[in-house]
Length: 506
Image (cartoon, rainbow, N blue to C red; front, side, top):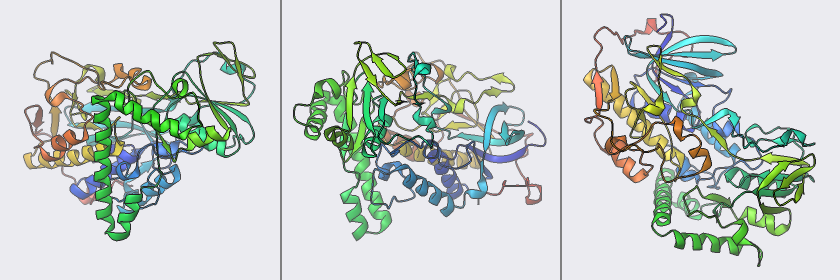
């Protein structure tokens, strides 16, 4: 560890939903900790600051995607990106986080120094590199690359005469009114872009290789809006949040227990939303069961309305290649276009794709096991937030942040400097980080992630169970090893505090 490094008790990497949640929990539960939040972008918000494509919105209700400690008070429960950004910025202001956040700071490398019992981070800011040190590192950087989208490797993209656009890098000056647009993809991004562009005057074709399950629901939660009118704000939010969590759990469990019944219900909803005689079998009936992949939410049936109006259509076919004037299908048919949008998915990365080392030796996380979906076997003082694939991301983010606070409090009580999840012996049965979810963006990256096994080495993806494990059960168990380093002095008086934004979390 460099001697001139700025030193903190906890460094949080990422100032999106997960990082903001982590910072608020730490300030409330561990006010004596010196914290710093590093954000590579020039603004907070993470996903909601990065994505700027038309219609960007939540695909979960904001009563569960919102924080447990801050009620969502707007009328729309399925919220647009700007509304979510306002909510996040309000949270930062209300909890006085601005002085702790360093925007434009990208972590280039992280090294654990066993002798010092701390992490040393190489950070880049405005082209210059600096060193920061932290006793505890809390990775809240999400699960996908900000630099690259998934390359679907469709041949001929360089031949197309018009713009070929990736939603992750949406050009602000893209003029699509009155244009013929092909959106390649059938996930949440495509189903958000298509109806919005159609509404704004484009003639849009959603070109998909295979269908996705969709569910239509109102963007306003009538019960939530009623409760806010008759109950205190926090009570109304808590009731709505609990109701929606239970509903998510019931739908998911029903999908696993009786997939054919859920399938029939979902397809019945589609048939009601589309014109009579529409080919639902071809365009909206997947070959897999519901929740083998994530359901796509259609607020107020907007995609169905766009199709019914004639401004949008769905084509289900395999692509041969992109041509100068559009996309040629394997059938030989060519779809003409002025603009092509490749909504073909994200590129997943682990821990922001930062290279991690221990005393200079590379850490291969794929050879580790996950501890409760948060820590990595054999790696000290490191926690990572990874949300739910079958529910709202923030539910897990809040649980993880709460658990980290309990862990740090326990370490202080013990006088421990380090905590490590130690494997006593290699589990006989190793499973991928995520199971029973064969979505392409997941399966393409599972070789990078730690594995899971039975006992505390599970990544449950089950909110009800995680709530018991992370919020109610004791922190200490037979797996976590706490150590005190007698040669390390953690004390730091006020006159020794580093300059700048390294201020107390209190």
